[in-house]
Image (cartoon, rainbow, N blue to C red; front, side, top):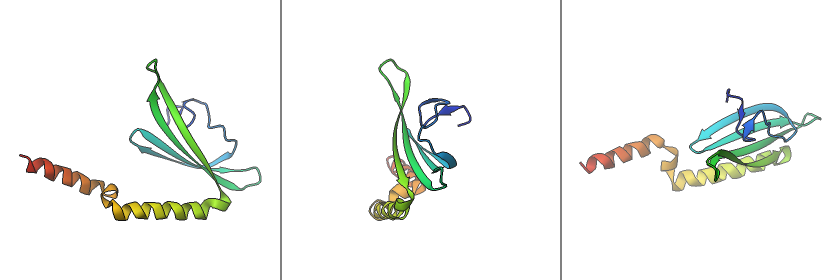
Length: 117
């Protein structure tokens, strides 16, 4: 992100406009999507979290446009949100473990390819 482009806002130097002081940021690039996990501080020192999903799209004129979706998570909801997320991820790990083991999925694809030879 050293290019000055603000992927959250979809422009150069645009900022994300939610008003909190930046405390910590984590960027996760995942295919066509980028996720931003930003810890912000309020004026009285409380923390809140913004989670932003940014997707690159091409408009009718062929110009890149970044669509974003954002949620705000406040301190009183951190534990419940984390528990709900962990439960949902655990469910997927049990029912679709291959989603979490990219190496195993790649090996299976290679085996299938060689089996066809």
